[in-house]
Length: 254
Figure 1 (cartoon, one colour):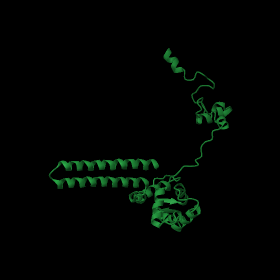
Figure 2: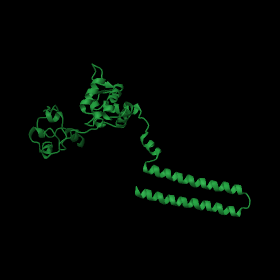
Figure 3: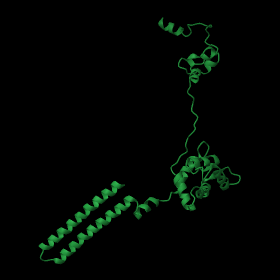
Figure 4: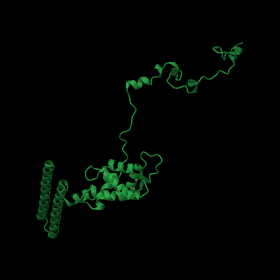
């Protein structure tokens, strides 16, 4: 920050020096001109205005850099309101999470708690899981087990002042919108197959013996019904005859 102020001071000095030189040139021209004194005065006044404007612009730049300018504070705080359509997109993603039959138009209590947890609405201090369950029960219909998007907005309106104390309902609701927009369900805690020596040994078909060995081929792929059942040979040859199917080849050779 000190380097920025130092650099700004140097730039200000250079700017003032340039303005001084500019005014000096106008004064020298005034001595050369014997006529048009009024024109000389107008040009001198114009140069002074340009210098004052440049200094004013540089002062505004320093105030913006240090965050003391009114425009800097208003631009950082005044962000456009979040539309409910963006919130509804995230609502639909969480509504279908873990339920292949869900349409995305309604959300159950489990997914409502999940969206509150994943989007950090639940902070463990102002808003807890108990608060979320109470609000869900409050906004849903008596006999229903799910809530619609409109009821979801009602629930956020209830949770907003709890999450952001000291804010109005409208401000708190917009802040909650900002937490939800663009979020998707987190797939934490997915069960993954174990990788251990014991598991590898039990699934290695090359080490199978007896009837289990007959159920798999050399590549480890199952043989299906052939490996599970004894299918009778209906070809007409006697058992253990190894020349089955060779008659046609012998006829062709002859």
